[in-house]
Amino acid sequence: MLTLRSRTAAAATAVVLAGLALTACESDSDAASGGRSAARPESGAPSQPGAEAGGTGKADGEGSGSGSNSGSNSGSGQGSSGGQGKGTGKTGGAGANQGAGSGASGACTGATVKAVVSKVKRPINHLLLRITNTGSRACDAYSAPLLGFDDDQSVTRIMEDSKPQSVVTVAPGSSAYASIQLSGEPGGDTHGRTAQQLTVHFAPRNGSGSVGTPAKLTLPAGTHKDDNAAVTYWQSSASDALTY
Image (cartoon, rainbow, N blue to C red; front, side, top):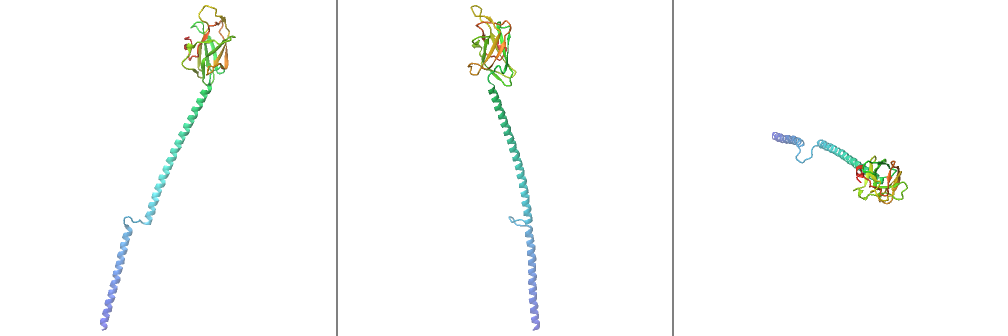
């Protein structure tokens, strides 16, 4: 009887020990399986915390670098555009000043030009009047010189057929010219006389009256003129003036 119980107890003990051994083996297998799972995460599963932080840090670093370059390039481009705009503004301002200076120059007068009158060989009975701009701005020689010999009460006749196509603009240091015909065709009473002084008045843009300071000149010795004396419009060259 005792032997049967002892065998029964021993068999039960063996069953329990076998169950414990099986449980231990299953635990070891699960542990091994869990390690492999951690080493190879499934697709779509989050990576290990350390790898995730590293990836974020790299991405942030690249984003920061790209942003810095973009900002630098953008700033440089805007600076360049601004510089060009400023330069264009200065160019525009310069153009405006030059326009104002040209417009403000106005008519040539005795205050801005030096006038000289001289004899010429051809044509006969002619004088050449030249004005040279002594100022720092261009002036316009409008119409024709308004001449008065000595104490004449009226200005010398103007040759209308000598009118140029445009107004003669006289740059600083440059000259304009007019020829003076001293007498007409011989014959008749033309009140010829010897003149000593010549007063040159300057016409304004609107052609009415005179403007500015006149020029007063001493005529070449023996200058003889009569009532048929005439003067050309201002010309840009002496040869053009002496054509008439």
